[in-house]
Image (cartoon, rainbow, N blue to C red; front, top):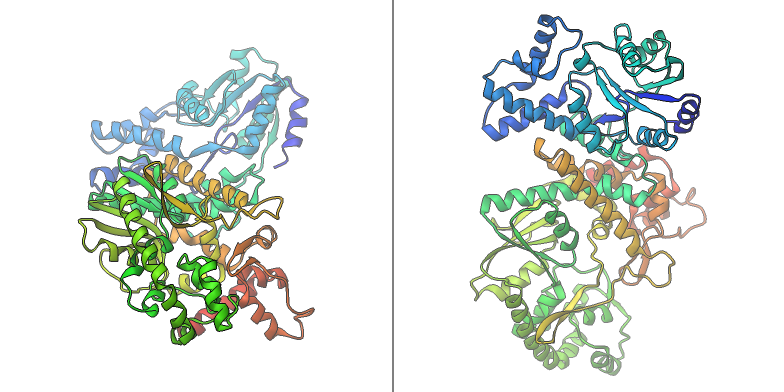
Length: 634
């Protein structure tokens, strides 16, 4: 929308009229009487009813217009003809007004135009053909930041309309004693806001009918909840000029919101009153849950695989048992990486490796390590340190749990993946009175699956499309859930309290002017803003299914847009060293070496980003994903 063109037109006039719905205000529901669907959803849920309110409300308005002699009816008159008792009608009318306020949000470009009029000291009048009264319209406008206008004229108050002969314009001019030649009316309806204004001698500016959707909107999805969510996203993102924020709001916000709502429902079902969000994956999840303002106590609990595995190493009889505490290992890794996982200092293992002629940076696989006599020898010499350190850390961890009231029946919240923390923690809790129910954003594998483990997203073989998609964009779930601190390596005592020992935050990269941590902060702010704003506006009116939460992420995961590829391609993560999400090509030309291209793609952390950076064809990427899906699961 060309707001500068509208402002130039305003400069030619002294007085400005604004239409409301479709102009100053956008509704975040699809076209039609869908506000009534929201009311029906809420009423039926709250009263365990099957009210058929939407159809009854449409019929009541039709009857009111037929039987009333006025040119416009008001909401009270419509509800007089609603097929229900007086008490129920009162409840439904209140719900409708609340729903109208919930779905109405400021049209960002027109909000700026409105502010320009105030800045230029132009008298403003609000003009609406609507069954809502001026008081009811004023409530909607003020909720959305519209203040400073002279007066609201609603057709149902004065019983005159814009759309027939423009009589409502004539009424305002007479009441306010205005010179019609000095007036500009701004609206979105070709007939009521343009032709009939012109007929009354008023200059008019017709704004385009625009539906605003997010960048990853899927037009083929006709699901009502999804349509409402996307209209909400599209209108809220107008005026944003930060791609990281937009990605957080549109793509990751719905996942975060869906998980948070699901977790709240789980707590209600099990009557859980205490939740522990495990660092670091639980950082954003806790912030999101706290936005729901429940009476459930939440604690950010400093823990990690390393911090909970270390205390149980003292009970292992072999180095193979020690290694098996970690459920996931890279395909190859260095000896240094192995010892770092168990908090073994360099000065302890380096001399031992040196005697054996082993460089600590030498790459090795897990299978080779498990069969290695050298590894057996090294761990045998390190076992005294491991046992002493393990006993110390166990005492610290138990004290930390006591200080944080980690006892009784509680829920633990984490990202999931291989569930290494859970398995190790269960070893420690066998002799306690602590009953733990783990809740995960997703669980990647069905390892030792149990009834007590709850997961929001199934990324195992039972959900092959999501499982396959993570191969192309998994790291973004790690990025969005990153906490602003490093992992917990263990615990120490400080001022008679147990404190976590934190490693460096790998995203605070010192050699970049703009750190990855700052990008993450903006991404997370977008996601949290979605959670808070969507909950406040539409949360109580609709169920939010997993499919709704994942739609944007699926589209981004497989076919990211060029601007996101440019923004995130050089984002650096720490694996076995720092690496970009998209690495540079290994060959000067892939045209004659397609196998090298596909090898490079699969070796990249972000394969779909790599593919579309060098072959900017989204249908081809979709086709490639389908081929990958079929080859893996058929």
